[in-house]
Image 1 (tube, rainbow, N blue to C red):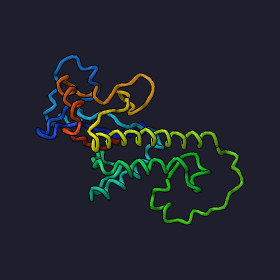
Image 2 (image 1 turned 45 degrees about the vertical axis):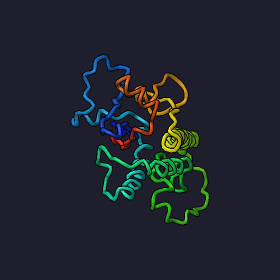
Image 3 (image 1 turned 90 degrees about the vertical axis):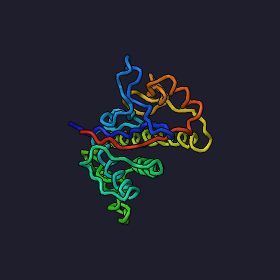
Image 4 (image 1 turned 135 degrees about the horizontal axis):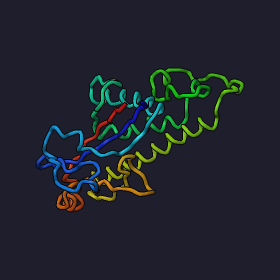
Length: 222
């Protein structure tokens, strides 16, 4: 099985601490879901960004290093759920952008192993001379990997702008979100408020989004 890597979020009411979000709200026909039940916490989060496969693994390792610094923790790639503060979003996004251009060491291998964000690369001279083209090398595949990183990073950056619009302007103009695949700007989409179960909560959230707190985590799923 490959890696499925998610950045997830949930929204809670600041005055009560009550979570108002659940995933796939459009598919919930009855109000069976108790958003105040702590044992159901992992089902209160919806997807902000999704990545998969080997490329997701190398990004995850870099993100865990960043989160450990922000949280003063010692999370590892064995941890399934890894919380992080909203203040870390910009550095996580900057790190993801850095994978849009791969290192000299990784230009001649089939799977990316490190990004420039990793200490092992940032502390190197990285002045390896150009080599002769290798027969086995798939240039188009490598370009596709770099493009995928850039697309994901741009989606995350757009999300950050909307979160900060809420924080600084109390305005709610969210991007769309796929039910499983994170944020996007095209296609058949959900909006983040579609993951708010109750109509009254949706109305109050749209009217005063600063009255609510966003909580973030990585879901590291094999």
